[in-house]
Image (cartoon, rainbow, N blue to C red; front, top):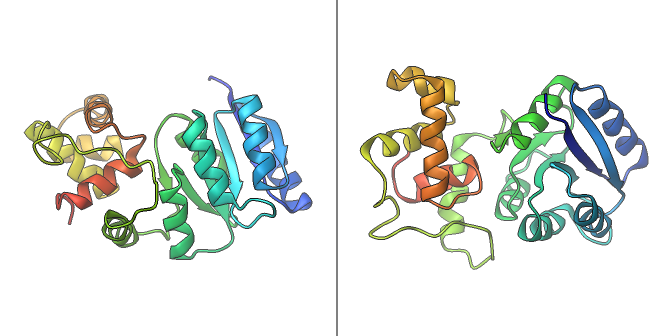
Length: 224
């Protein structure tokens, strides 16, 4: 198992220490840095280039969403937002900023470990309470937003013009929140083949992760 290098950013010392301890108990997970505010998080990530950043939202100096925006715009590190607030506005802000995941702080340790590995592997993750309805609403609202989010461009002619029929099917299932294994079962193909189709979608649509694929699918009217 490849080592996953993690930076933990949270302004509460006890929470930060606790998160570092939980991360350290996961196989193949290593904490390489900490930060007590958003600006420090940007600096630490820039210097250490971790695979995943656990990012709190409410922090002094620079909030977690702006820190996430700066990190995703200038580094290859991926951000998992951790918060006690299950509020749409935070999810929207995190997604606009380029976060690859959103998890509540009351999630059990094994869920946090799994989330870190999912994010590090290039996938995207949302807490169970963050429904497809929320993502659909975000996609509709952000379409008219001038907020400089890292939203991939649409290939001509039209947002899905360069996709094959099979790729459109896979994209629709990604938008439903299905895993590669579930997509494989639905389309009667192997999970590996589904993974290959998703990889091609990411490349063709210049998408950072599955979250952006979901947004693209909703904007194009492909998802329910």
